[in-house]
Length: 161
View 1 (cartoon, helix red, strand yellow):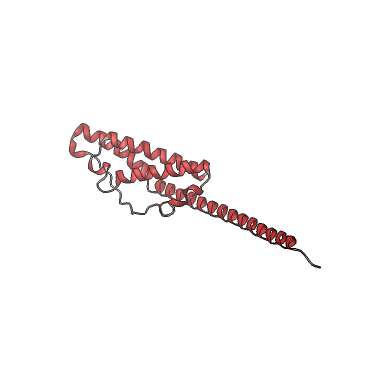
View 2 (cartoon, rainbow, N blue to C red; view 1 turned 30 degrees about the vertical axis):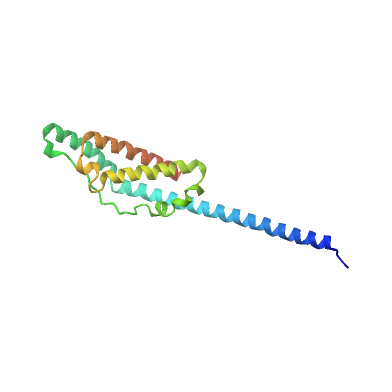
């Protein structure tokens, strides 16, 4: 059986096309796996952060700061309540070490994920040493931080659902 040049070219092109299609399918499958894995990791980190927030009563600390500061301002400037929390530099390792993968998160969650971490970064700056709540605390500052905090918690709960 003698196949001509045309037959050999057809076999070669068919083999190349099949190999190309298989590579596309494998890459697509791998990308989906990475996306799902990263999204699950982010959800786990958000859930852990919300759990820490609850267990350490951070919201109550902000609320008591509003109350204590309001009382302190009416009595004497020396009684203003300050809030300082030592926060490690890399307090959200999964998110901060994988910023290049944020686009892998599903379209319906990516906005909430970025918003959640942005709100957390803002709050962290306010309670770190040298932050707003320990250098220039006021009732208004505490109220603003509490609004940001409540928004972060709300967004965090949307992410983990």
